[in-house]
Amino acid sequence: MREIIFDTETTGLDFRDDRVIELGCIELVNRFPTGRTFHHYINPQGRPIHAEAQAVHGISSADLTGKPAFSDIAEEFLAFIDGAKLVAHNATFDIAFLNVEFGRLGHPVVDPGLVVDTLALARRKHPMGPNSLDALCRRYGIDNARRTKHGALLDSELLAEVYIELIGGKQAALILDSATAPAGGRRSVDDIDISIGVRPIALPSRLTDAERTAHASMVGTLGEKALWLRVAPEASSAA
Image (cartoon, rainbow, N blue to C red):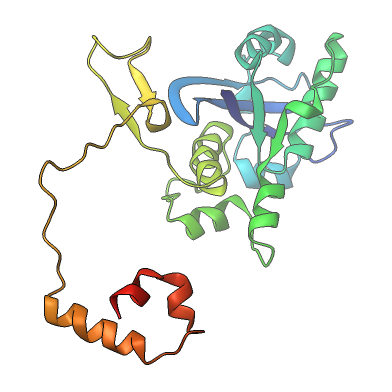
């Protein structure tokens, strides 16, 4: 299973008029980061950055001088996310901006069936909140000390860790030798057949004969309708 954790930064909050100025993605395969990322700063082509937005992400218009337009990176981005589920925090916001950008280029909108919103997951799992990315990092003990400003790639890296916790925690992995490992060299524990052998000599009982006799005597005083006799019927024969 392939998933792309992603985040955007924008010139403002209105997806109809504002533009995407940063796009960052982390690839997960079977819930493991592969090391593949996608990251671009994007020139908004004359759209000014609102002061409130700049205070959040710290990106200025001067920072975007000479950066590619969205049209220049769209095909590369589409190739990177092709066939994957898209995971974002408050995904409605990010997808709305991407769909408008794609619409300007004549590309189809993102299939909503491929989108996972971690904010919705967090609200179901922790209905009392808070469920911001920073709050979830604190809840799960994820170090977000580097996050002095919002940034698409860093936020995606943090969200990848939060997402794994939201869906049940980290899975173990085994690195096998080349003789048994599949392509890529990594398999999950669920893929490994583990057989448990029978001991050739059984371990001795921890109960002494005196303890067994005392227990059987106690059970004999409970009466024929005792719950113990339903749970451990062998006790009745021992009594």
